[in-house]
Length: 129
Image 1 (cartoon, rainbow, N blue to C red):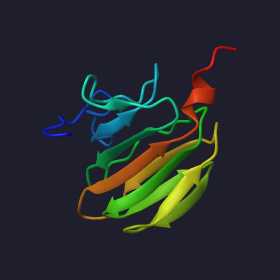
Image 2 (cartoon, rainbow, N blue to C red):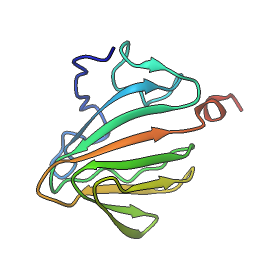
Image 3 (cartoon, rainbow, N blue to C red):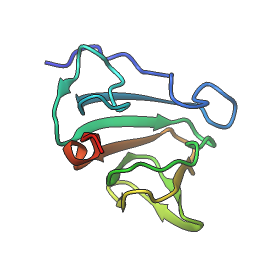
């Protein structure tokens, strides 16, 4: 049971103006940085599942992952920058980022952007060598 998960504001620049956002997750990968609720999330060697909330007018720091990542807009609207290409997303729209693809997301509406995210294929990513 997942009750009272606390928002995690520890992401890169998450508390800075223009970047205000928090995350929480229910499923965390092994030995990786996608566990925003240590000791509360279920550990799974293959995937991580969580939510990121970006406040209106704010954006996520541009970044990459060595694994595939999918985002589903649960509430609000987004403008996604995927390797320099702008894509608009609304409620229930989704986008998948291949491994090592630079991406950033911005809350484009008047309400917070709620993104469900899934990190895939973590077992392969976390293997040594």
